[in-house]
Image (cartoon, rainbow, N blue to C red; front, side):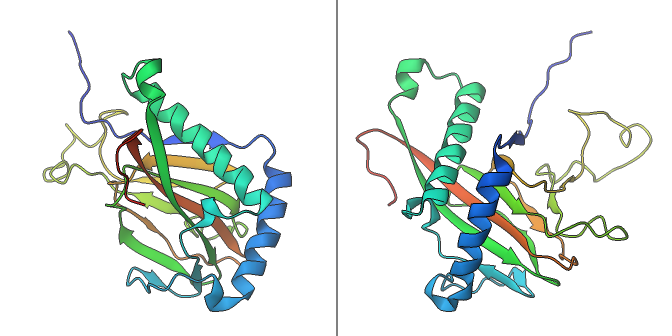
Length: 221
């Protein structure tokens, strides 16, 4: 028997080696930016967002502050490693690619959430966790990210012949529980949502979208 696999969706995770140091600096900076209100708040109010959730404007990876420059460099390194590993570019071809970014932070307090959405203006997206906001023992889904299976017909007929398939051929959603210092990278087309955060702390993440061009070609920015 020969089995070939098709239609896979990658979710790639990295753990920052000095997360405690960097996250402390990022948290101080981001909470200071949040405290200045509309100066750093994105002007678009998205109907998928609810509760006490602050979304910054989208220039985070182009700001001069040292902790943000370090995070931008780390995310870029991880993303380029991911794309090179998953693609068939030669080294010389890969050197001709350039990346552009939108990046922003979310500060979420008790009751904040984000409904189902994707990022249809980019090819790759990522989420870096600075602070989980603390665990809630009786609500393990607090602040959790759910990624939805993009194969819209996969669960039309569920019976014992399908319902216990193992990865990578299983179907259904995947739940991501954040860890401080964890970077998760995924294709931007993937629908996802953030369950309501019900902890007593502050959930802080940085997210980014990226699109790629060949050097010398016009980009979006």
